[in-house]
Length: 595
Image 1: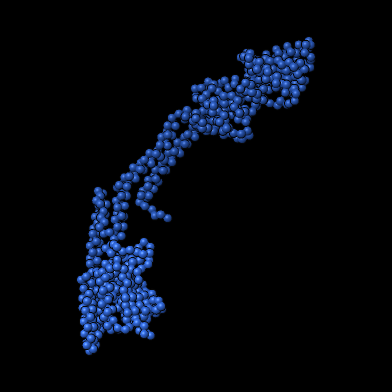
Image 2: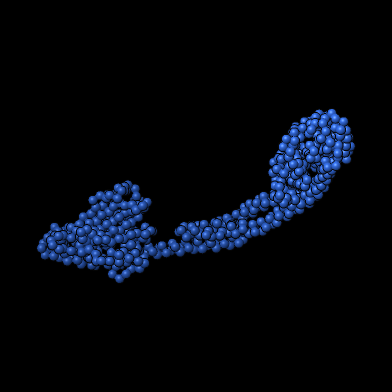
């Protein structure tokens, strides 16, 4: 889990305060909107209920009239029994027409009352005075088609049916007398919607009449003529419990309020623009929605202020501490105008200065310690080797081998001159190899037939810098602990210096190999552990001293490894990092080194 930061905590605190307030404000606005929706919907639902009830009552009265006439009017029954042209037929026709016209005054909802005698195929119409003659002819033709179907299949007319005529719709109710005569009513749905024209014109809404399948039958004048069918999809299906209102999104949001007719299978719906319903609330809602944007802007300003006043100084403090931890003691914090950060910066800068001075003192002490250790090592070497060398000179003088004594003296002079250079912090690989050559040449005088040595140094590494007496102790250990002269085979020491690469790191490898006694089981690991220890172990100060002085010199880790030689003997490898002054001109040959 990612650790928390100061910035995240400050943002979280700001969010914990502002988010609940914004949510409460939005919830309050939504609640007020729902209340207004509900109140307006209930008010308009009452209006729709009243109108639908009036419409159902009018249809029910027409239907009662039709049933009553079909059962009790002898003239209507005679219309289907008597032949056309007879006196009885003429009387029945006259009485039926008069009765139809008379009842149009009582049933104004019906545009046309009609009667039909199947025997004479005579259709009698009694239209309202408001029905144009052309419309009457169209209605007459449509009724003849319907009655022809009724006479052919004799369907059971159990309710009002929707009929389409020239792009408009009407309700038709036909009642069969049982004597091949029919009586019915034609109700134009557009005329039923006339009261809503004035009602919706001022309010910007629209009244819609549809059937149970959602088909648009009629609508009042309004701006949604083309969008109305899509709005009707939100109406509940037949048999479902309808909601008080629905929200429909067309060109804008509308309240859809509907009421179903119980007699004719019709739905009367009212579409009201939400913007007009809510009056000033939409502007308040927009303002409410702007609050999160304003809060986000305030948060941005707040974050910028925190970034400059608090976060930036703290980030600078953290960077300074990281630089100090990585070894850059020159890190200092910039001035700040806040009193608290002024105290922090002064304390940090003072501590960094003290640590820098302390580290310099420690480094100087390490240098002094290194020089003291080098002097102690040289003092350790001088008496031991000096007495052995004098013993060799003594025996050579007895044999009067003056030429050999001269060469011996020259090697001794160069050897002790090099060993007493205590003020030199570093020397080159070439100088170190020359010193080892003097040392082994002196040993050669002691064991002329039993000692062989050779050097293989990459010429590009001749100027590589390293601490004095770094390789010589390894060669001396090989002479002291590995010398062997068995079976007439000479003891051989080989010193190799070559460049190598481990991953992306370039290094210099110094290898000292012999064919002597070799290492006991587990001795290699023990020697490596002793050389890398924090403090020297008894009897192995020389190896520990090499590693310690190289670490101080290169300021990084070095590797000293021990291994068995082939077919016998031991191999010691000292791996040192490249110095910038020694890298130029050094080529790596993919791990292949000159022999």
